[in-house]
Image (cartoon, rainbow, N blue to C red; front, side, top):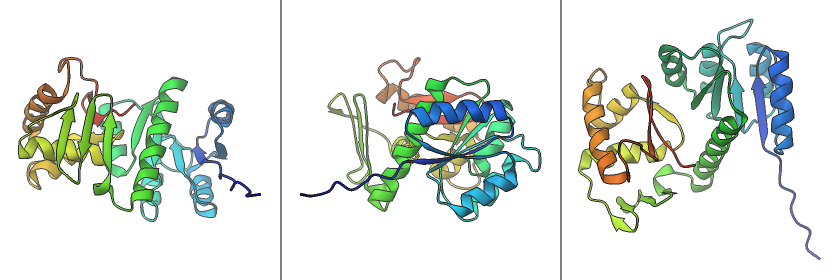
Length: 238
């Protein structure tokens, strides 16, 4: 009789100095089946990340021994593990700095359990897709009535093929490759137009408007191409 292979639990490292928040996250995430490792300082978190492979990191920026941005940069020196920042710093500049340093997403305190859980699922699903496929270009994106085939360079909305310009497709493909993640204006400008256009956010705003009109049922209330105010855009796949 064949014995089913045990599935390893998803490991999440929580780097947070407030014990009450750590206890809360531990209870919520364990109830959802995750295996939790806790750290109260940046140094402890980096040691924990190096001691055992983690599937995702939840990180507070306001740590007692070092700034969370330093922790992000240190992790990015050797790992591409998804990082979700969970911080009381909710200014636009703080979000941009964290994302530019290498974080994948940013959730401001106070936060809702439903929102955090959804962000976790998106990060883990997309990271697993990359690991399984070996290259992101082979991925196919599907959400609601939107389908994107990066290999064939084709986009479908409600079963009908959408006719995109080269720039519109490049913008959408960039968002697909990082689905669920917040991408800053500067990152998108570099990826779509190349170096030297980082300050020209009006180009991006106009192009996004054109793309929404071709993809969204209601461009004024977008379902897929979400705005992160003052920071950038996110392709929502929940």
